[in-house]
Amino acid sequence: MSHIGGEIALQPEKRFSRVSTSMRKQPFHPASSNLGAVGPLFAVQFLSGVWILTQMSFFPIYLEEVLRLTPLVLAAVIASGQAAGMIAALWGGGLSDVLGSKRVLVTGLAGGVLASLVFQSEWPLLVVPLWMLGGAMGSLHTLGGSSYLTRAADPQRLGLLSALFALCMTAGGALGSPLAGWLLDTAGFRLYGLVGTALVLITLAATLPLLPALAPERNATPQLGGGMLGMARRPAVQMLIGLRFLPTIYYGMSGMLIPLMINQLAGNKTTVALYGTASLIIASAAQLLAGRAADRFGHRWPPLIGYGTLIVACLGLALFADHLWGVIAFGILGAAAAWSLASLLFTLLSDGVPRAEHGRAFGLLHATWSVAMIGGALLGGALTRLSPGLPFIVAGLLNIGSIVLLLAFFAHIGRDGGAGSVLEPALQPAVSPD
Image (tube, rainbow, N blue to C red; front, top):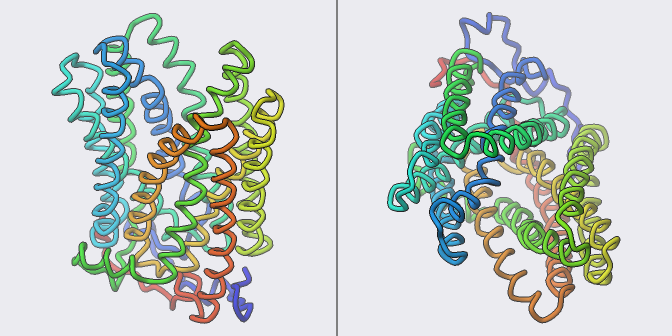
């Protein structure tokens, strides 16, 4: 893989030391990274997607139909889970660096078992804390899995592996959604919740023995708060935060506005559902294509193309906001661009942040995602009252800044010689903390 700035090319054997000991006796080491080694992580993602993504879809319905909450209170409950996830992300990233990625992932799964009992109560004072616990544990799950992947994967393969990592979660949700709908129609929310609890327990029980433990990072620090603040002051990390924030503003507003626009223009829910299915399929394929392109052609051009495509999608949605074909076509294009950029962020973080600090970096970026999702929805709701296309004009203008940030990011890591794992010295085997 070519590295931007001096086009420094390193061979895999120069990046990582070779470990010949058995994986059963020694912690898993990046030197052995391949699809077979991270397969258990992908399986965890798939099983988690079956429960997490369906729960996100049906919990608002539970609040409305069973707890009889008003739309304003319902929105506040949903936002409380995102807020808890943001707080957990800030601390969970540091915990991942200190305790190890697997331990943080397992903690998220274990807490998720308790949080999955949210459908067993009709008492709001119990439902809200369980939902907030689920948001916090979901952040730990995300951070543990994401930092595990970037630490385990060869940077030359990280583009494709990160796309597969995201795709496994999506595939689990795609499979689980119709099964969840059938179960809810036939048995109701309580049995659905119990099945979810059992699924999380199975995932946890399989993760403990099957997911290899990672070797500890030599320069991880237990000073979580100070380490996070110090990282946030670094120019490369600040640019990564911007690169995460700006496209998520679009994604936050589009996820709320586009289904409403299609429903208004088409006059039926079937078209909305077909749009969701088509968007899911095309966006997943775009993720795989972007990841493969990053591995083959380097990390600069795929995200540049991704941000450019997102701007085109914003322009199309703004111009054709009153035409059903335009909303569907450019909505799908925007989803494909946003999903691709989400998977390509793994490669950018790997280039700009030392491997030992990936957990904290993912914590900052996940907190950024939470803020941007809330901000995008609020901004879109406010601007659409003035004009249906205005939110997308604003999102497109904001993401012109993403291209500027991306070019500045590559220039910065080129001057510094690269801070990420691609330029680190060989890692030595050590006793695992997981």
